[in-house]
Each structure stands twice: as C-alpha cells, then as structure tokens.
Amino acid sequence: MAHDHHFLERLDRVTREQTEFALGLYRDHEAVAYVLTHVNLPEAAARVALAVDRAADGPVVIVTRDGRFVTCLASGMRHDHPVVPHGQLTALLAKVADKRARRELAQRELRPDEEEGDLFHRVLTRGSRLAREDFMAVSAFEPLLGLAPFLGLMDIGLQAVKLRAAVSVNADKIVVNGATTKALEQLHRMEWSTAHMTVLAGAAERKKLDAFLGTRATVEASATFACSAQGGTTFFLRAAWMTARFGKAVIPSYKAALVKATDWMGVLDAVGGLAALAIRHSALGGEVRRVFEAYGPPTPTPVTPDDMRRNGAFAMLDVMDHVDERMEMTLKVGRSLVVMWSQQIPDGHPLKYTEDAAVPDELAKTAALAWDGNIFDQRIQGFTITAMATAARASAEDFYYPREFVRAYLGPWHPEESLARVRRWKDAEAKVLPTRSSQPGRNDPCTCGSGKKWKKCHGGPSI
Image (cartoon, rainbow, N blue to C red; front, side, top):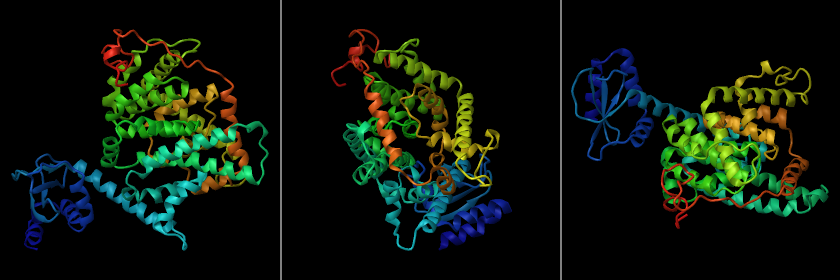
C-alpha cells in the first residue's frame, strides 16, 4: 500500500490528461497484467516504466514486475528501467478492450439452455451459416482452446476429404433422401468446420502461434492445405490469411511445399501463402520475391507441375506489385456478388441492393472473402489470386457476415448445396493432369531461390 500512496502523490508531476491515463492504468489491474505479460522484458528487470505520453523522455509510470504501482516520473526525470513505449502500450490496451467486448458479446450470445462450451459447438455445426457474432463469441475463449483449433483443422480436414471421396463415387446418381441428406449435411459441417478453425487458429495471439510452430514445426504447411483441400475460393483465402499470421518462420515450409507441389491446388496453396506473407509483412517482400523470380517467365499453356509453379509465382508477383489495385478489384467483385444475391430478397428489404455503388465496402469485402466460388473454374482461380491481396490484410471477422446478412442472403442449408460441391470434385477428377515434374540437376540452383545447389537444398535426402 505504501507504493500505491507514493504513486498517487507523485501524479502532480504530470498534466491532467496524463494523470487520467495513469489513473486508468492504476484502476485496471487486468490490463496492466496483460501488458506486462505481452512485452519482452529483461529477466533481471524488477520494475518497468510505462510511458503515459508519446514524448521520448517521459513522463512514465513505474510499476513492479507483478503490477504494483511505485511512482510517477515527469518528463526528463532519469531512471534505469526498461520502457514500454506509449504506442505499444495503447495497442496492448486496445487488445484488452477488444477481448472484453468479445466476452460481453459471448455472454449475450448464450441462450438460456447453453453453457460457454456450447459456443464452440457452433463452429462444428453451423457450416457456412456461422455468423460474425458466433465467431466473435467463440474467439473470446481462444486463450482456453490451446492448440485445439490447429489440431482440429488438420484432423477434421482429413476426415472431410475422405468422406467427400466416398460420397463422390456415385455423385451423378445421388438422389436426395433421408440417408443421403444426412451424409451431405455431415460433409457440409466438416468442410466448413475446417474453414472456421483455420481462422480461429490464425487469430490466436503471437505466443500461441509460436507455440504451434515450436511443437509441430513440420506440419504448418499441412495445416493450411487441410483447409484449401476443401476446394472453394474462401478456403484458399483463409489458408493464405492464416499463413500470413504465422509470419517469417514459415517461409521455408512454404518454399518446400511449392517445390513439392504436383498439382495446381498444391501450387495455389503454396504461392498464396508466400504472397500473403509478403503483403502483410512488407519486410518479407524481398525474400518472397526472390523465391518467385527464381521460377522464371510464365508458360502460355501450362501442362506440367513445373509450368504451374512458374505461372503461379508470376501471378503472385503481379499481385504483390499491384496490391491496392487488386484490393479494389476484389471489392468490385464483392459488390457484384451482393447485388446478385440481393435479387432473391423482397423489394423494400433494408439489405437489398440493386446497384454496385450502393454496397458498403465492408459488406463487399466479406462477400468476396466468404464466397465459396468453384475453384475448378479458371476464371474463378484468377479471382482467387487477385483476392489474396485483400485476404492477406484482412481481420478474422472480415470472413464472416453479421447474422442479419446470413439470414437474408443464405437462408437455411439444403442438401443440393453440398451435392453441388461434391460434383465439382467429380468433374475435376475427369481432367487428368500429369503428375511428374522435371527436377533440376543435382548441381543446378535450387528452384526455391535460396542460391544453394539443388542437392544441398530441396533435392537433399532430408526432403
């Protein structure tokens, strides 16, 4: 208590506005504890200086490592404690406020017959109808989920691929009845659970992302492919977004994934992830650019996996060079989608749009990012590449419509919806693509752009 008293007495050293900021910290033990656990401090530091202004020389509030307030120092007063800059401090406080808002939303979202754990059940059962409110409510408990979203993403993604293969055998002959409806609904839920857990996993805090990489360093690329293997535009965009959230540490894995890719889905997953990393983190742009440029010019008529890699790399270089233009193009597509879907809404409905220009940017962005476009259509593949710029810089919530839009645009799920997705795959299987890829000579430069010889890099025995 002596520390607290001394701190309060020394507030006369700062302005009224600075005093209010300092008192806000003093009254919010949870926020201060969050700050102290999310900054890098020297092990030997017993006290920390929290900057209450943007000025380089103070003023600062001095607190102990466990959050007790010691004193307040005016501008220019010397100390030898590590400083948390005001910009970093306010950013962390904003995260605390966001977490509180999510917890409040979660409490409002709970029905009388539900418990908090039931919110996560929505991720597994609501399929493409999971609303933004649902996602935000679940994300309030992200710290308690551990690595479950990462592991669930890969496990359920694999199950979805197996179930789809079983269902698609007789896709052309399927008659919608009780038994087939149950199987199609299960497939729908599993595919979209993969999509939701991709975003939920990617929305984790930095420490959680690092923990995943530390414990499962060989499978982070597999995690995004588990999502993109579901074969819709939004699945690829979510996978790229998750990759961008991981940061620099996963570049080697995605370089390796691109080298190994034997079909266009693998190529798109790898180049999309690398491009998203470069677009979200400008410091990574040079490294990713070197990887792409190593593949050389595009091929007019791609046939082999090598052709696909060259074309995918070239296309992503174009996106990286024209990010703002590609983001505007994505919004344009989103506006057109909203107007198209609005046609099924009765006239006079507040969410009905008849002109592209009337569609709000936020809604257009979600429409583009959440669209389950047929990835086997070459025109839609082009859109997916263009939309990587928007996905890379998106927030987790951008992938979800508010509930009012879900109800107005999507309506209830119908088995024909999943049957159409199954038939996409059936049609794609009829197009046989070569799977053999010519590899460089053992002493040739590696195609990943590292500058090493093939035999010393991705052609080595460890790959």
